[in-house]
Image (cartoon, rainbow, N blue to C red; front, side, top):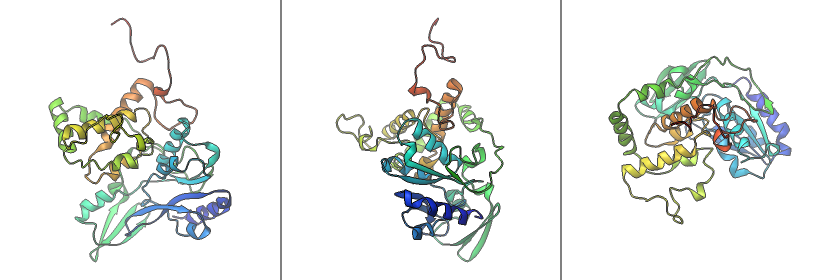
Length: 317
């Protein structure tokens, strides 16, 4: 990206006052990036930025609480930082936010479906809005919009909502999100919806990758899914238990999920987990007119109390 060298220099300028700066570096193949923890200028030289940098790096912030941390964020990632600040899970004075613009990130799964396999990716070229992937000696060209993560098509925050250092040009932010995907799914009958989720959860292996990748799941050592004292849930390998875990997970994220998509991206069984989270967010938005992580000064609706909620009628039934 044209702003990469500027970003590297700004990180190097701030590095002496920080314990670590979190960014991305090239992963194990040309199509994948992986988190990079920069402590020296030499580490910074390995930094990359662009559509391959999918990971929401804010997932690592709570594990580094108490240290001086720099973090690179895209627009969607910045919502997580805001939400963590709202819940006082991180301290503002300990975090330096490096903001970069984003026009969409690549969905490795979508490219995999087009190629048939991801085992032989030899090179990736990102030119403007085009992604060229060479696999098994053949070049395949895709429009970024066609292979971008689903969340990118409805992203309203293509530049960070919070940053201490900003590089790059702010892109057009014309996308809207009316939760049409949730509304379309709700048109199905109860039996069809139930069948959809039972079929999806039948693939679940309860690896908890969705929980571990979620930046707002901060009680991993005391998770109800694995606690034995008290023993909240069984470890029986049944569809009902798998669905129960996901429902609990979704409820715990009510009013908190920033829809970064890390749960769905990390799932090895391709379960459409974000649809569950978006359903809960739709209800929160309808009831409280609230979208998680969009304003530092807001109080998440389920962490506040009003005697009378504007959109909830509790009397006169």
